[in-house]
Image 1 (cartoon, rainbow, N blue to C red):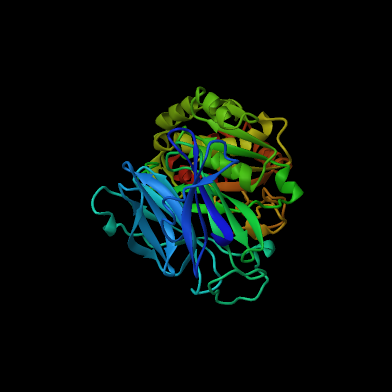
Image 2 (image 1 turned 120 degrees about the horizontal axis):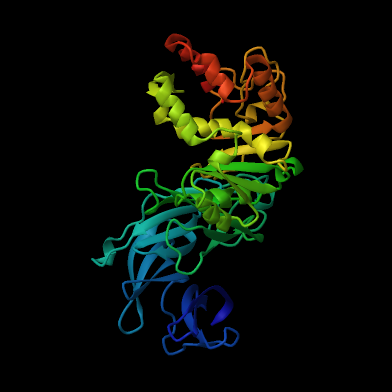
Length: 455
């Protein structure tokens, strides 16, 4: 071996020893070799086997056989280990591949890779291969999706946009050389991390991978991986509470919590759940959190109370989609809307600004919710004649949109002011004074659509 030694790919064997694939210069080309170690520090090259295949070798196992993705003749190629310990080449699966990283989840192979000589800038893509025990020559990579592009300055976002070429490079607008890290025995959807080189090969960065689940198949399999950069958050974002309304302990809830912590770094998470026993589960996800049952948030307002009222009133309630429905079919939904305001009088430690978040929405991309720009907020004035809305601004932010959405930023003092305003004008206590106002006649009860726009 001459020249450099590079691109290690280390695996733990069944005997708890280490096996490393690496490449080195052989004549005018580069080839992959194998080395073994008992402690990970001292290595012995398997010289009897010699070079086993092309370079940038990334191995994985499936159904008792070892396979690999490597760079052969300018493209990413599949290889398989034979019974003699040598490796045979199979189909080419990635044109112009520079580097790749692989991970397997059952019969699904996830490949993260970069390509040179393609449309700039060079970036990381992700794609999958469905593995089966039939002829491996027919395995094909599904169409790839962008995973990471150089969008931050340290990644090279401000460097000239040029088509990349084979070979080493620094101070270029390119991302290369991914490496994947997932927890052992991880079952998809599964989150992990990717390390990658920035500005060509000018540095190493780390990003979290968050699993995005299928809306059609529940949490049985992944649709894609979405990379989340670590953000330098504004102090006011890091210093507020978020109230998560988690009706059930769904399989997506861990990713909701992870996303809120990673993207926003809120001071504390408050959960509002449908069943008291759910509190133990959600607090396991975040041991610094607070948890309330939905009946314990808004004073004297419970699910059963709302249900009984709906059966007694016998009125049609207008939903936000304009479809007339009985309240009895939306009791939980209305209670959640009331609790979004009721929480200000329930949790005395609640920060002045706080966010409410529906527990079935997985945050994948950081949004500047409270950077002082009104168009970044989902809020609307709740009562006629009241100048201030829940943000404390002088006008409604989304004048033509419904107040009810999956994530909102509130100001505690303004919410309290609105509740006091409602109680002073209608009498009684919130929210029952609203029901008393619209209860007498079915036709006037249709005015409850105003409450749809505000609660």
